[in-house]
Length: 363
Image 1 (cartoon, helix red, strand yellow):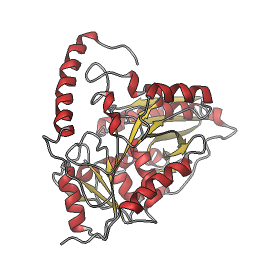
Image 2 (spheres, one colour):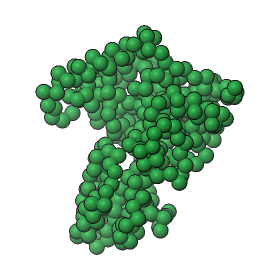
Image 3 (cartoon, one colour):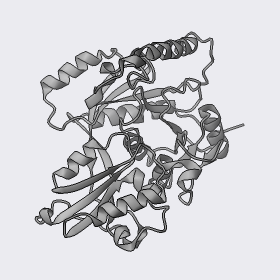
Image 4 (spheres, helix red, strand yellow):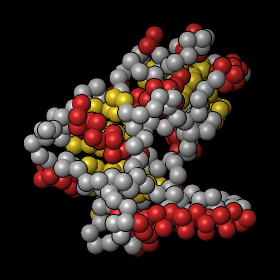
């Protein structure tokens, strides 16, 4: 789990006491939770960042969009607007945040909304879109004021929550014992060649409850897509036989870029990685830095590769040089279930919604 500053450990004890007491108040009913007469599926984690919530939220959205009237509710991290807002593809990052905007532009028949107050957000969705049949609560595991009907909890294979510590000594938002609130536990970013023995060891270490289902997923990197509309839909073949003549600048503003970097290293010999913090708001000086790295590539053929989330923020820059714009691509990320568990997972989600949906009319 990397080097840790032992001086932070006492602060983790204090943090654990505070979060533990808060959870105790909710668990005992002293602090009230709001339960809705509509299926609410929470997709979240205990670990700070980097478990793959957005690809999994998109997976569940795609699974249900043809079967139900779906709404996705997010906090809209780092947006400048306040309160409740229903997203539109014409919005920008400061209006609703990068991840909600990404989902909104991908699923235009799905209601995407943002509100830091999830109870108000759900009530507002039901008021403005009364036809809604199911709500996905993106990153809502710690938002205890809402009592979801179904909880999907994510943990990264390479940094399992059971091996971590509470903030700030570690990366846990709350005690790992609270994974008991989950109905499904997903081990994300798993290796495709995970052996049955490794699987059994991890399942034993997680020590899930009998009522919980546990599955392993991995990232599935798809064909690159042009970032800017000038070449929208263009594809670049990564496994070219002339890959020694191709070089890339990899631009990332995500919590854990290493899996993407490792994926691309199988196709390119020259990779210059320009990393930024998660949800980083790019500035003109950042674009200059990336442009310089692009020009300094020694390869004859050059590309700028980024993530789908970063592409959402890059598109808002109008002063990027044409040679960089036409060479900019993002790598879409999907998820894949190991051990043929996809059908079982899909059925659990769909059956929950079918059994709990109601005639959704607001008085």
